[in-house]
Image 1 (tube, rainbow, N blue to C red):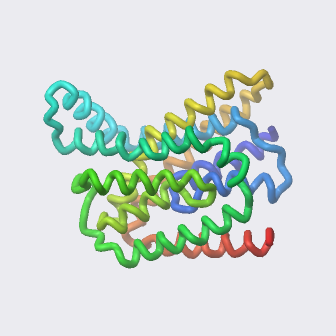
Image 2: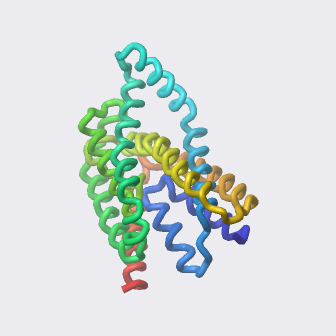
Length: 265
């Protein structure tokens, strides 16, 4: 892989993984539009590791606190506020994890088309805008109930459709349930941790079964650049989201979807 291509793809993954605009759609489309060769499974693993490092570093205090509370709850069976949130993060991950394993082949063979990406980009972008406009935005992530987490988890499973955006659909669900923008974003980012670990682990297992040579320089570039860009993305997104709202991302999604429909229909 060309090193510049690795940098561009890693930047794209880092900046789009946590924004409500679909990283998978951009990673599918950019090589197609520019005529690049497929980046390969090893590089996909590397950029996933990079984004995982970014979210773990950014939320290191919260993650350690939640992990400690969760471990304590295993012994006491009396979860406090942090343990409850940790359990909810795990529970919210299950629908996407189970459906991802069951439907992986179907998604890879039938849903990675520009037309599907365009429709999902527009449709779920509209839903994000409606949720941002109509949501009460009074609750934080610690106020979630079990039914809320189940709904957010089921929404996250929809992100298996390329163009949906995992962060976008979970923020949409959170906003619709009355979370503030920053609370919906924080819960979405916490939900990403176990899912990225599982997705990266699954890709790593597939990679170990391959005999193709690995471009280690591209791997290092991909992991490092995606980690840095994802950290910056999380930082500025959380700093600005209450001020700017979701509409800049909604407008971007509508424009991107329209361009894709024009190009591929």
